[in-house]
Length: 200
View 1 (cartoon, rainbow, N blue to C red):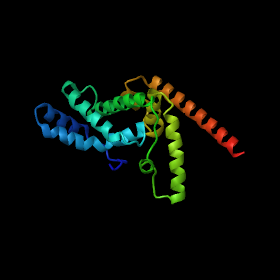
View 2: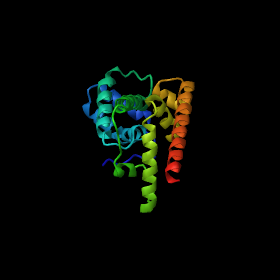
View 3: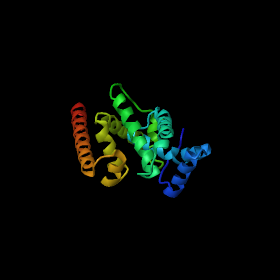
């Protein structure tokens, strides 16, 4: 299982640009170096965007295949990292749209990847159940709103940073985040009322 990337230091953009320039000049190992530099970061972002499902490795390969095809048209209008993460978000959104038409669940071991620290087995079981419930609720939020919510509310990006990745205006991203939060809270409240009714 791929280890989750956590709090890794930023990569100098000059180094990224040099790798891209070398690759475009015919240096094939430069692309491998770019993959090795970003694979864990892309995998971690995919996990946050689509959840800890078994399809993440396939999605990771889709991202880098799309990058391989897109790099010849890269003109440096955005940083290399932004270019890669935009592709990541496109792949994630396409996957989320397709997945809305079929049931999903998450492997308990995959859920554990998102639980920090080393809690007791009882606490871990409770956290895993809560996380699974939230992820299943997120499945009912439209992909564009879900992605904006994850980037801003979960990853902590600013509206401007998130807007650069989803290629939308910051005010549009803000509205998506607000709508997603409102929908998520409403669904959680309904679930709590249903649980309370069952308990009583």
